[in-house]
Image (cartoon, rainbow, N blue to C red; front, top):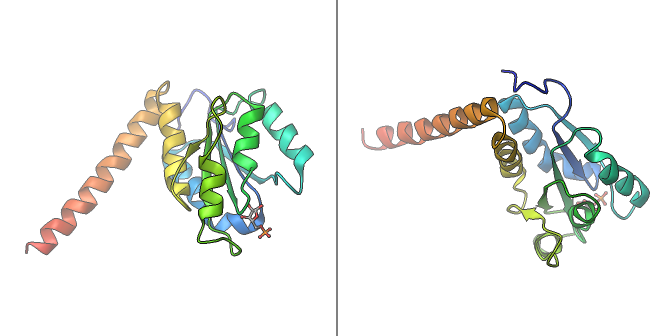
Length: 169
Ligand code: RP5
């Protein structure tokens, strides 16, 4: 399926603080692939590559991105800092990293943004929902994406109904 008009220009940027976040953030890419939405994915660390983070955020709109999904763990400043540098919608994914205090460090770092610089925060390791939310944002102006989302919901509903039928058999 092609969510034209923008067939190949990435519409969504998926970034993460470290290679170690990829096992979680892959789920966002999977969803966008399923929905046929072009995306790009890379590593941008707020602490280890701060200049790269500024460059990424400042160029994001110019290169055609519409939404940024940013995942990070620990002192997870990436989503908030990127949100401070662009007016594109930023969806934050708190990642439970190996040094995490049960993930609360990541959750609170991303969730508790000051007024004026929002980050739409999903659940801990909730990268799939970040992909879906990004698609829904694009879907407000793209009927092909909305159709793909409707189909996704139908598939989910049918799966649940099959379990219900099996249970009652
Ligand atoms: C954060 O620190 C990253 O987002 C990652 O979740 C966490 C640990 O990074 P590594 O030490 O595994 O590179 O910046």
